[in-house]
Length: 181
Image (cartoon, rainbow, N blue to C red):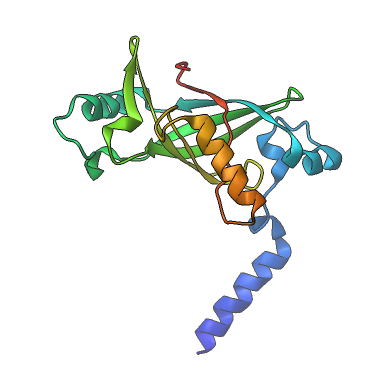
């Protein structure tokens, strides 16, 4: 019992000495340009674009190609591996924020992936490891028309919110994944 008291004492002592262990610095991910006023207004800024750059692009492409050409209707879990990525969010006032993230293919069926010209476009699931975007750390970037007409999806979620029903925040945002729009 005394060992546990010692460990707890040391833990709380370290927290008192270095409180940055439990607090996140919001300025690190937004080009160190933010002041307190901008941090408060950041939640109200419109997102213009999101750029996703996957660290191991070759493995990501191979995984995506295997999903695309695979002879299955339901995508097996083995193709839903997570990959490290950098997310760059550009806001309407020329503010750019960068985040570290883990991403994976999103969706159970092949309607979430398609061949566009010479590139693969797909829905992805994003988990931010650093920072947040308007308080969100986990979100999905869906391929257009995956859930029917995307405009209908946005209108429906906003209508549900207006009537105080729980619904996800939904927006149409231009996204670029490894230079593919």
